[in-house]
Image (cartoon, rainbow, N blue to C red; front, side, top):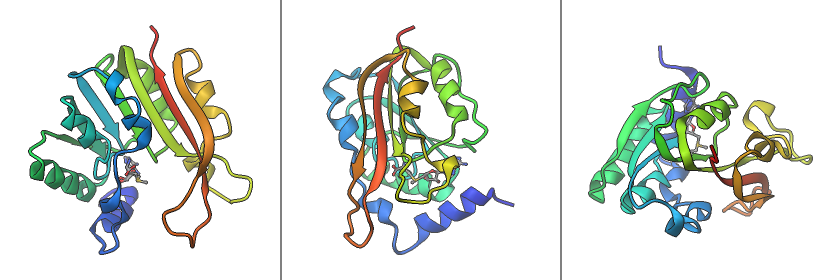
Length: 193
Ligand SMILES: C[S@@+](CC[C@H](N)C(=O)[O-])C[C@H]1O[C@@H](n2cnc3c(N)ncnc32)[C@H](O)[C@@H]1O
């Protein structure tokens, strides 16, 4: 029996209305890309179709895309092959994660929240390694599931001992004007020790 999250997300990725097909590399990573190592190993967690991982693969990094949805990862693999980019896939339930210590130069966490990953990131990044994190944050106007939503200031506090290069809580406009903007938090930080 597949994990319930896998069932939900496989169906989304396989639907005719797969909005993730249109997703472009996030500006948070694009704006720092010139400062990133030219090689090395990057991990994109909850990667889905790997919008940023593939971007870093095109810049010369080796990339592992990790997700619970095999359907999402298969689509990421197809995209990678079309662009002749290498991409390694791992299927994992990231609510109960394990990552190898000091293995990664870059970790990408976009639009997914599993708090046990915070400690994993502290262990799994090499000293000087980069963490890019962007996801939904507490919004007084909207009822959102606290398990999937950062508290205000939480992301900053979680990595405050690192070298924080960028941190912002802001509003993200939806592509369709039918839905209201959502509150997000963004962080770019480097592990100091
Ligand atoms: C909102 S999508 C974001 C995908 C991608 N990061 C992006 O920005 O386009 C959330 C992703 O989390 C993955 N996911 C959901 N629950 C998960 C779990 N328990 N373990 C690992 N990945 C999970 C989904 O399959 C999906 O790809």
